[in-house]
Length: 91
Image: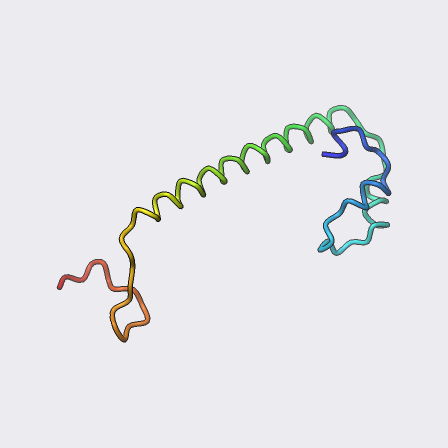
């Protein structure tokens, strides 16, 4: 998002990396050095928008699933069992 907002300084961008990232800030800064072609920025913008759309969709799905789970009857294992009962077994 910083790139789309106009940030071009590789050191500033590299400092934003996830702490769990295996690559050093220097390696990332080196990879972020170059030209900022309009078509690449355009596709980056599209990718970010899709990511945000899918993230909203997943969040909405999570809310819906939680509401559905809340309507299910309580589940308990049969005494002495460590696995759920067979839904196809009669009796």
